[in-house]
Image 1 (tube, one colour):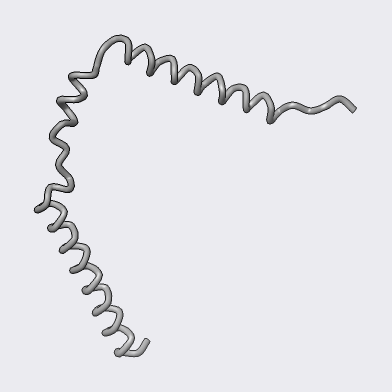
Image 2 (cartoon, rainbow, N blue to C red):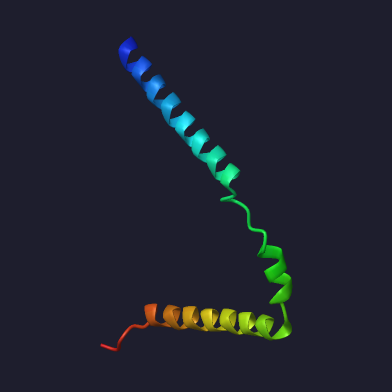
Length: 78
């Protein structure tokens, strides 16, 4: 490879890295990654009824997946 190509590649990668670092620092500074109410909401809305709803949804997913698996293996009679 030519030295010019390597210099251009290093320059572009440095520019992209600096841009990414600047975006990350901006996001941290402006609070883009802060989720202050996550744990409060988790404690506030965590009860038995919602747990039962989550278990029921998981069971529905499993039943739907099993039903789709049965359809895949179905072969009509000749």
